[in-house]
Image 1 (cartoon, one colour):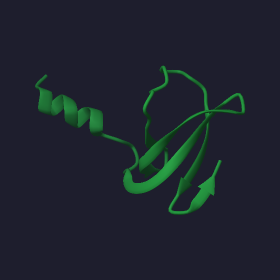
Image 2: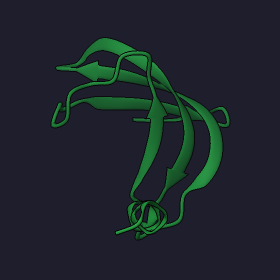
Image 3: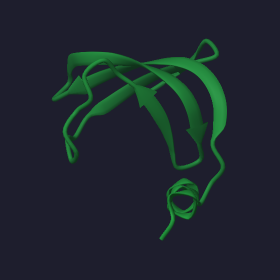
Image 4: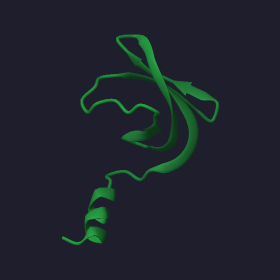
Length: 72
């Protein structure tokens, strides 16, 4: 499979992602463990850029603030 087609398959999503500006507080077991920047959001998820990515499968809680609106 060529690289262009492979990229297109990886980028196929069930719901469209929309650009946004926000911050995410990352919590593990109710305690602060980091923060990140939210730049894309969709009906089924969001993209959070962090300085230290977490291992796959890590369970976290998020406190998001997007466009001055917070949610947990």
